[in-house]
Image (cartoon, rainbow over all chains, first blue to last red; front, top):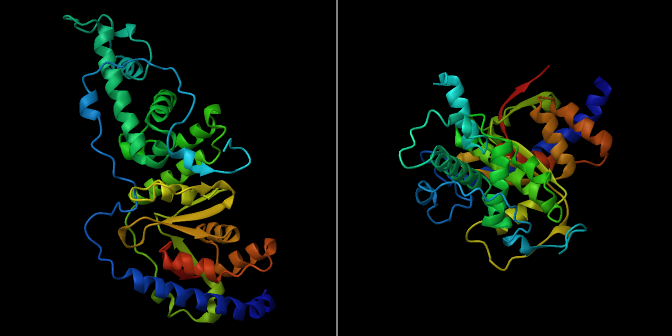
Length: 86
Length: 258
């Protein structure tokens, strides 16, 4: 074990040294951001308009279990891939 | 009258699409039948849980569109009702459920996008903990690096996909370019979800880098973990993976194991 460790140690030391300096640079850039109370949801897609929970609360369940067969959203923007109809 | 536990389970079943007639004798009708009254509870339950899922799986919701999402959510809610009282904890099985749907056979990336969103959700709600920084490791003697072991930050989540799910996720965020197209042939992605500085971030790792991260997150010593990865990938250099992980706050603490 010791022989192996000795031969590999300088390689690992160099890799960690590179990693630490790169990580320190990243941290320095990120340090400008102030931590405020709570956790930011920035980057989360939260731009929907007010949802419909109040509007829906007096409705009876409409029992429509018919499954809509085709997704009709932004998946049209995802192209290629061997199994997609593209 | 039904015993309270039976009344509660009958209400739950009715709200989740089951039999309503067990409650026929215990509901005051007064102009509305018991099925009409229970249908209101069923409607509220379905709407509330669908909105909870849509809030967690915003990108899937956008990708498949509202009608499809609501239809899937309704089936999922009945097959996998909540087991915890907190709505943000609801949806753990949703990615697997999506993967099981034949209607999504032509959209093989969908379940992986959902896994990324679930990872994001878990990272967002994970416990607060210190973040290990590069300066914390400055005092470690380079000869001892092989003995370093880490505890992962509670927010760390790993997600791998044969598809470019980070790009798919990114073009479906608000403010993203509406005309952006993602090519699925861009290839596999291995991602780490982290939460340094109180903000969730998604980082890209290499495939062997993800394996190294899994070993380190399980508490393996750095020397052993790197050697194990190099057994499979002899020219693997851990530098860029460690830079991403330490710079991204993937770890909370370190120790030197003798």
